[in-house]
Structure formats: C-alpha cells, structure tokens
Length: 126
Image 1 (cartoon, rainbow, N blue to C red):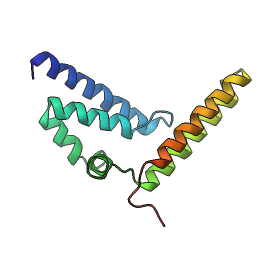
Image 2: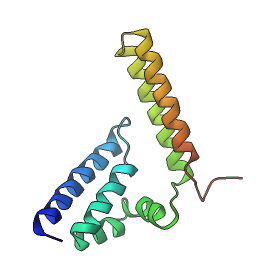
Image 3: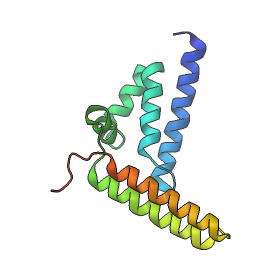
Image 4: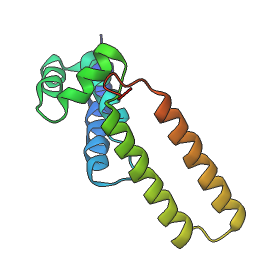
C-alpha cells in the first residue's frame, strides 16, 4: 500500500475513533459503528493501533464481539435505543419547529431503532 493511502486510512481511523469516543458522552452519536470504522481503518494502516483498540479494556470487548460474531451485546443495544429515543424526543419537543419535520425525525428514529434491534445479540434473554 502506498504511503498516501496508508496516511489517509490512519487519519480517517483517528477521526472515527474521536467520533466514537464522543459518542460515549453524547447520546445522539453512536459509539460502536464509529469504533468499527476506526478499527477497519487501523487494520489497513497501523497494526499497532489496531491491536491497541482490540486489547483496550473498554473499547475492545464490543469490537471483538462485532468482529467475531457480528453481534452487539443486548444490554448495549437496549441502552443505545433508549438514549437515542430520549435524544430524539428532546430534539422534537425543543428544537424542531415544524410538525412535518417532527414526524420525519420521529420516523427516522423509529426506523433506526428497528434496524439496530434486528442486529443479532448472542446474550439476548430467551
């Protein structure tokens, strides 16, 4: 791989990592998808940073779960849906002025929650 492409992957990896870390604190920003994107970029640009992410005590477990099983832990999934719902409700009530736009935001949130819920969870209670 040429140096420019490797540098681009490395830069994108750090940008996605920053967004993922922001997502830990901001409920409207998803954490896991950005961490997965960051890991994919680091896998192509820096074996050292990629290994660091996978071995990290907080970031590593959800990444390994996705890489090995293509699943999201059930508790994480429910927490993400709950926080996303709360954020969207607050946004609709306080920041979205037009009724049609409120409906569009609510519909988008419902579709996103349904998609997220459909992702497998190995630890889902039966």
